[in-house]
Length: 116
Image (cartoon, rainbow, N blue to C red; front, side, top):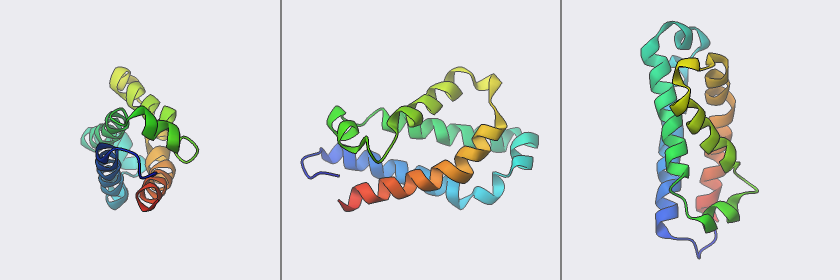
């Protein structure tokens, strides 16, 4: 992340990494079977993904613009909006895919931002 960005942006990125770590560390609990059968597991996964979008919304415009090539902020925020506003219509396949594929990639991108 460029040095001229606010410390607040760095704090937000660190918070997002922490959320990603939670989802990755608990990936074994977020199986398709558990997500389909256990409302607590699904709710926890959705809550954490919503938190990612909430944190992304705290980033300054400069931070979003300067990192647009490495992080698709529109998708991060869009997932938050979809879960928050259409919770009863959650597609478990998308939640599973998000945790299994997108979250590890997002975490790597976020960690790289802290090293710049």
